[in-house]
Length: 375
Ligand code: SF4
Image (cartoon, rainbow, N blue to C red):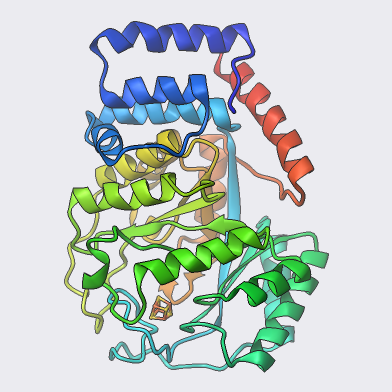
């Protein structure tokens, strides 16, 4: 539970109460989140009302919840490397790595240990604290040799003092347990969109199969990283549906990536119109209010947003980014530009955390520091 500890927090709460007489849903629910902490019994209508609140009000209240639950200056830097690119049997309409679309992407085998370790080392030197490895597979069943290699990569990168994340497609229970044993911090498996819109985007695996993988990850004791993509042609209602599914899981995902589609030529979604910054802000602030403790990651599509636009996303509650020149196969922000942005916005890199005890400890410190900074 988030707690109310200092005079500063009391003052902030009184200001929330004052505004609640004429308040938007964002104001009311943000105040409730601050008072009561995370909850899993959100109705879809409640989330819709937050999402549809006047955008500046939503931004303000997302920022307020962010300051309660996190050190608002800290931003986690993750590096995502495609360790096995292309040739995927799935039909995700947004993805250049599907073998069904003609995007000019050349399929490659699993990267060697030397190459992966070199990339992890470079990422660490550049300030990244989490190294994520992505493989373009439906699942890891029948890939014992490759899977065992990845277990080794996980172990060695963890030994370098980095958090390690994988995204390898669907996981079975046993594989999740093996990844946990190797030292995996988090597993990424996005829900992509709402249950209703999902069949328009992917037909080769079901929404329930995705949820089952998340359950295996959770049960193995690995942190869950799951979010979605906006700009797939979905309605606002589908964005709400995605957040509702995530926010009503038995435990909220520790990380929630919010991606803006990067339309790639040759995929069925190549002509989608780009997402506007206000749509991102609505998603980020709503995610922050309904899943206050999660790391909300400003993910794919960040490359299109200017520094002031990204600043609004951080203000709304985003506290994690991908760094590195590529996000799997699509372009990402320039490293030097990110360094400059951190400097100008007064952001600081978030240190890695490796155990629940450590995480709880630093979370309490973060809350205290955030509250004292906000006074
Ligand atoms: S998103 Fe993943 S599963 Fe879907 S086609 Fe791309 S690589 Fe395959």
